[in-house]
Image 1 (tube, helix red, strand yellow):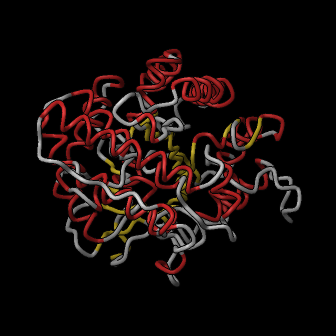
Image 2 (cartoon, helix red, strand yellow):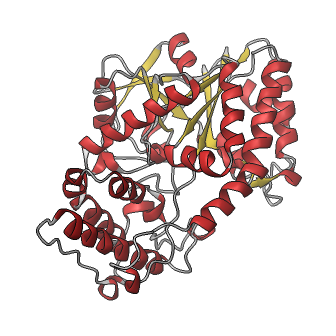
Image 3 (cartoon, helix red, strand yellow):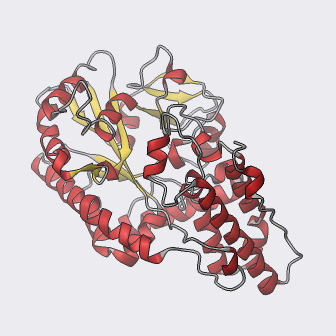
Length: 413
């Protein structure tokens, strides 16, 4: 038997505006509200609403045999509540079917595990509370930001009571093994590990509309055949991808919605195929092996490491300075200031500072709202300096000096 496990990541960051040195101590509004609303409404129209309607249609058509999971960041939910509340309602309708699972993650889609375990735990609990409040679910499976993962993280998450955790099925980790089985981290006794089948996931997420791809066009029948061929050599095909694949990254005119509309029918023609959520996969299948992942991996870029966010001196300087403010920010008790600081922990801000212009360069440029990564760095550091001003004036804390030396960092990465 092969179970298809669909998990979609839903995320929108609070994009910061081009905050100049002249704004410091004069304007404490860091975010580009016009751009955030514009992007949220556009993606809701192209992806979230039509995709949710299609998922609901498929669940009903196949009598609850079609099942999916979502991880929705708190920053995305905040924007939906402000700009497109109809998206929240459409996710609630999906939750009511009993065929949709909501996963757990850091509320602000942050890299907090790497810099502050206390903030990491706080953001997880904030997100868990939001899932219960909106969708009536307490998540049992955890996915870290950008699927960043290692043994230590798995052990920490097991200690928080989760039954499952997911990560990238990177070739250099798997070796001769397959991502199509349930594993267990070597540091854990109970929690189970689901690994992304990146080849099949990326066929949909990245290659679907590529006319130069030897398998184009990708039809539901062809893809179902590939999945069915796993029977006998695997138990779960984990298809993990950004939800924006549907309608935004792969536009409607590529046929992506029609592909998904026909996929359940083609997959269910094989009597040994079904659809399960991550929790259902964990409950059904036994652990087949231990997985030892000492160094951090992620689902980004060819390297599958942390270099997309922490690969140069600008990125490292910015994030270290950000977390140096954590203690003072939390001690301030100022809810607005704390919320602003937390929005700055979102991983996207550091992704925008990436200077990789090789195999993955086009991907980074596509998602970057700035003309250059250096522009993103300068705006971010100006904001941090304004945060210091706010701390000084409102809390009368000792001076905190943030060093901004972009000229010394340019070209040294």
